Image (tube, rainbow, N blue to C red; front, side):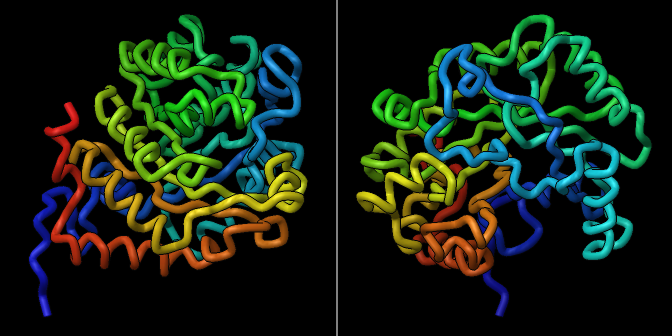
Length: 316
């Protein structure tokens, strides 16, 4: 039986602005991301601002799904073959995911990225980084590439709460995130924010406050993730020694729907649940069943008779 969907930026049952909907409207067909590890590092690992990285970050800088080849072209070819087996003929985005992918000299950034800018089989470049790894020269370079190919910058925010930033050993501030965002926005670069739910000792209200904050910013998109506790991370070892509370699947669904309600309806939702390698994931194991999580979010939105942006104006 057909059920009316009150959300305008959708062509299916989703009551939020999905990444897939954006890509289909922009490119007219299926588009896939190929994760890459360009062997960057991070100012929170090399001693510039800290060492050891954020407590939740894996040994591969959260780039655990990039193909295990040292050469970027080999990584990309392996990723393309895998994507095309699943979605034949799909278009591709080169996704530089591991570590902080603007933390290098301009000369090195050109060496890494420009071969991919020139490739005809890539429609866009996605670059994950931190706000403190963006400056005027970097923004100008990204802007020049954006004239040739769609450029996305994914800025890690995780939380707006100082207690969480300090606990997670982020060595990064909300102001640094905001300064980088406004600089990139001024250059016409599309930006997404990455936030994490269920950080230790954050309440549901804390998580919704983070969503309300990003609703006020000139962001094109957002990624919402559940905290993953992984082997060989500081936080994973802390959890094994002294377990702390994590959101259940039902609680996570409730939080995510509440966050979607306060986000602008035109903000693209690039992700509502994340991946972690099964052999490394300690908890929560319920995140393995992504389809179930996404279906539960859909059902909860129907149950509440709600949609993305329903309460957005009240947050401004």
